[in-house]
Amino acid sequence: ATTPEDVFDDRKAKATGFDLIYEARDLDLPQNERDGLTQARKSIDDTKARVKQSEARIDADLEPFIKKNYWTEAREQLRRQVGTLRFDLNTLAETQPKEAKKKALALKKE
Image (tube, rainbow, N blue to C red; front, side):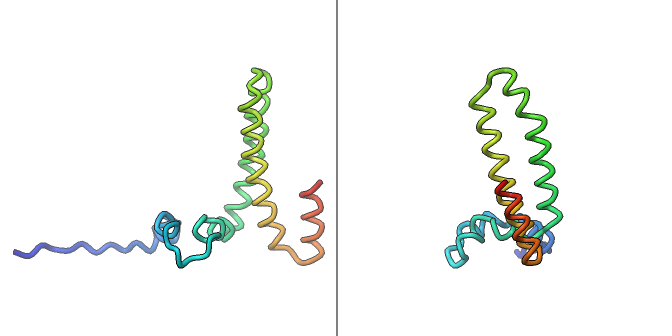
């Protein structure tokens, strides 16, 4: 008895990063690719969206935590968002010409 085989076209899933779990285990890939850092830097539109999302989370989440004296939660939320912003601002600066890149990195430090 034979059974039919289903063939699926997973190119769309692969393009959206669905298979990252397998890349994380592939020791032939460089570490930054296995960690997903290279993939996160590919889309400038996604990077800009993450910057806006981090800004919104800082604006919306920190003040309520501080008012409730949830210092640990406020600190951790700030640490998470600043880490994301640092990564994304570096990514955006890399897309700029040399002079603009220097200015962007100086503003980031400020």
